[in-house]
Length: 215
Image 1 (cartoon, rainbow, N blue to C red):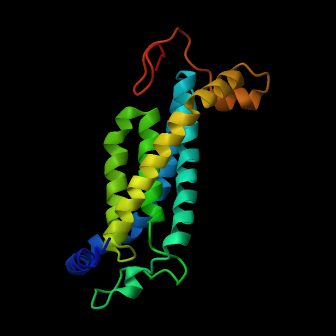
Image 2: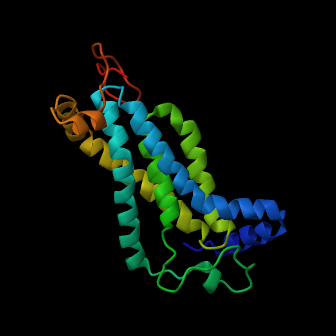
Image 3: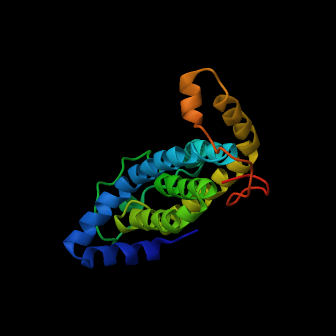
């Protein structure tokens, strides 16, 4: 896939934007990952008072994101694609320092993490998708905007992260739910605290879950 011309267009556009827009993009391209981390923590804390399946999904979300990141790193070693900020001639200068040679471009780790985090958080907290999906798309775009990735790098990263997270969550949800249920009845204070108290009443439906499980 060759998105060199689109890369040139986006980076040229970036150079015409006001300085505060460029600065905001530089901050967001890194700070977005930290914000996803905060949402993981908030999602876990919220899920502690939910049913065991919801709590399990909240715990699995960051783990699935980590698995997606590892998959992205492994794919990088196979693709060996040079960064566009070094490889593309006649392109605008990148807004941030170009990563060193050997820190390959395809796929984008940031976009992979964003895609996986958006999906993982949405599994445990469906309404949050209204926030996490735009966040992931904006993070992916910012990697091209600041000049360190081709458009096809970030598209591949988003798809890779989303698919890996979805598969991991669906595959491990039942096992994780059993673990959370066991932890909630544990005599170990830390285990019970981490799993949360759970609901006080019987089961009911949860967003994205199976019928008969309480939110």
